[in-house]
Image 1 (tube, helix red, strand yellow):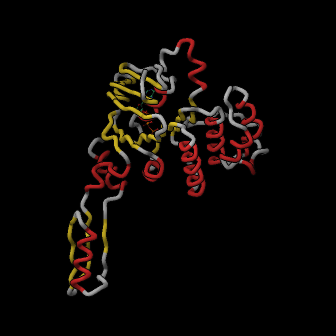
Image 2: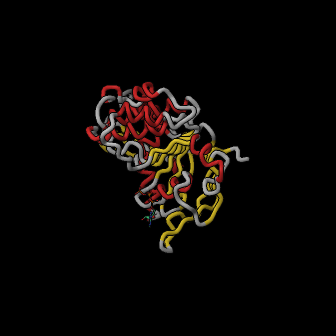
Image 3: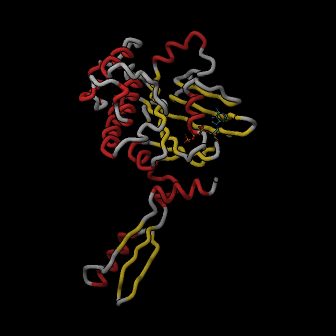
Length: 284
Ligand code: ATP
């Protein structure tokens, strides 16, 4: 019995003789939000669909909620009840309203959430009586999420969940995801967005070319927390620059020397984006 919600060892998958997933190992703990970050074609969707039981693997060991998604046998239906899936492209049910669709899906699950509260939670109350085909892209995506969580899943898969969202909808969506995590849901999300990984994930796996480059909390990805800060300022009419691990101390010293304000002071640290581009740049 695995103690992780997801356990992957030595996972590989080839298409036409080429590795899409070239030996991945990772563990996702119960209750964790885990993000898989990587460029187009990195192998994210392939990995996630293997975990969901929608694609077969070539080799490696996979356990999802303790079971092998490729060998579920008669556990198939009870296992499916415990996971929620939000795929990249949504199914079409154009003539039904949001409310009809959510109520309809709720009937499939033994432990369904209250459909009206899911509609409210996903910010669709005002659109509840609109037909799905009249929704905007972002609203449809929220409906996908509503359908993914209606069955109270223990584990939720989100494949690029906020693609096409405006900034306000993304923030609202992040709050929703945090709320689900606080209720104990384990969440695996794939994303292209660094700020999304930073805002949500307890840990991030960066993958490129079917391989994991690093797994760590977003704060320490790529040794970011150890990277030196660049302090720049103007003193005696000249620009100065210093790389330092103790910028606060340095600024205090310079300030004391100058008797207060430091002209044109800047303290610059590498952003998550700088680090990420460096990481995947070396792989591509
Ligand atoms: P994106 O961010 O663009 O969604 P991804 O990280 O999800 O990319 P995958 O969709 O897993 O990447 O694709 C990984 C590699 O496998 C790519 O080179 C892709 O072209 C290839 N691939 C994916 N699905 C298939 C398929 N059904 N048949 C053949 N090749 C495939």
